[in-house]
Image (cartoon, rainbow, N blue to C red; front, side, top):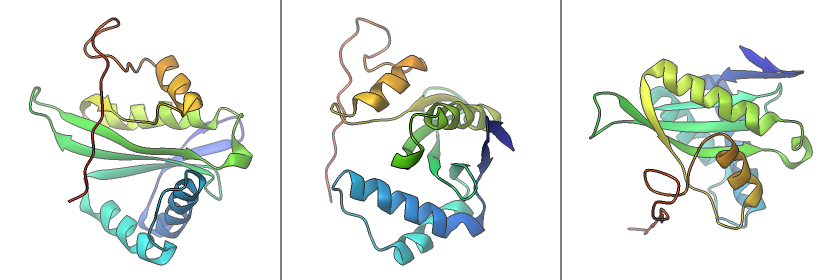
Length: 157
């Protein structure tokens, strides 16, 4: 277990699925995005944690923040890539460095697993998240500063 100040950081276990689901639903509600009910999401989260390609880091006891990482085999290197699917800190806990600590811890977990690349996306309007990611070395341009802007697309099937 790692820690920042009085906040404990740790990888989630199967017993954490209900707390993770609640945080994810709160996250989506905060940004007016749809989410399944907590009980349904709890089942999905437990399944993801058992599957082996998802690692979720938690901050606090009880958890007040999370970093959800999905691992995949890389096309370009012999190591894994890590997609940071979600990074969330409950509103009442923000401003205390928990998001930065979670991101740092998530990067440590990804390195320990053997990943050599991390990608993520966030809304253009989420300036706090963008500032955090950029301060931690992430870039929104391709390959180097001054490169073309990366654009994220999505589509429901």
